[in-house]
Amino acid sequence: MFRLWVRQFKDTHMLRDTVIEDSTQDTRTHKILNSLEKACREFDLPVPIWLDNNISSFKQTSVTRFTKDSFIEDVPFDYLEIKVIEEDSV
Image 1 (cartoon, rainbow, N blue to C red):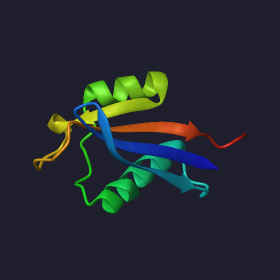
Image 2 (image 1 turned 45 degrees about the vertical axis):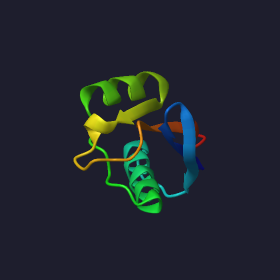
Image 3 (image 1 turned 30 degrees about the vertical axis):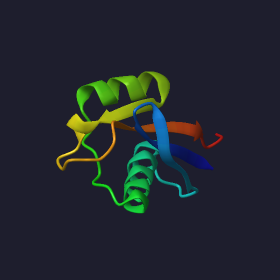
């Protein structure tokens, strides 16, 4: 099972969170992108753009923060954080 924790923050307070599970046989990258899209749909948000700093931090720690710069539309929060909390066992 693959699980992605998505949290929305404003002024250091968590506004809301969700855990998206994916049990498909997709690649890890597809699971991350699909889970992020599902969470954004649930939160009624646009899907953020992956900037270079998001990619590099996610590769190192499996955690990244999407700030307002990652969204095309204006968003009413400071950042959206994603974290892989469970990976598929091999």
